Image 1 (cartoon, rainbow, N blue to C red):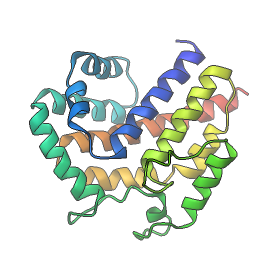
Image 2 (cartoon, rainbow, N blue to C red):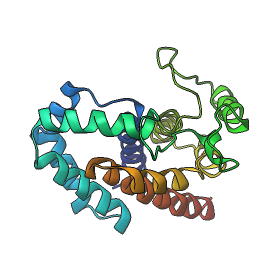
Image 3 (cartoon, helix red, strand yellow):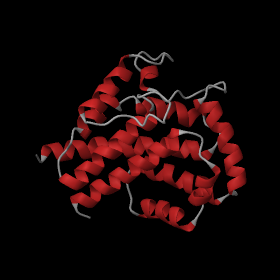
Image 4 (cartoon, one colour):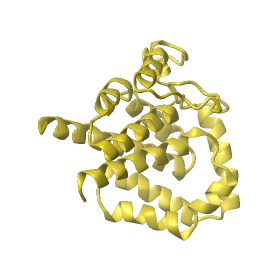
Length: 212
């Protein structure tokens, strides 16, 4: 796998993680995710190796999707999503960087403005159709998807590792809360795979910069 392919793969993983956090997973998407192509793709991620945490998370997601119908998964994941991300349960996992700055569940703090500036400096902005805040985990992961995609195309770093270091350090705390609070193996697996992938990204960023 050459550098372009590595960056394309990184971009795709960021996009997958972003979509999983963006909203309740639609029934139509769950049906597609239980299809052969998607499950095969998850299996290929496992077979391709990676960090232990990442592989454990992907394995959990794969087992969850294989072990129940789309109808059952849709019902259970809607409930889990509301409890976790919409503050409907006893142990929510707030998906905003602002909530982890001072370890208090306060939104619209400094990380929001800082993330928004990073998007603006890169010539990008959040889709106005997506009503959530700019420091939502899904938005920050989607931004990394765009930057990694640009790197695959032009070979430049495009500021992605600065953003990873300055804006996504909170994700490990968020994922720890998510893994502990989730009732479904799907969201536990999502937390693990996110933690494992971002840990890999930190190592990858260091290796790339050492070779510049």
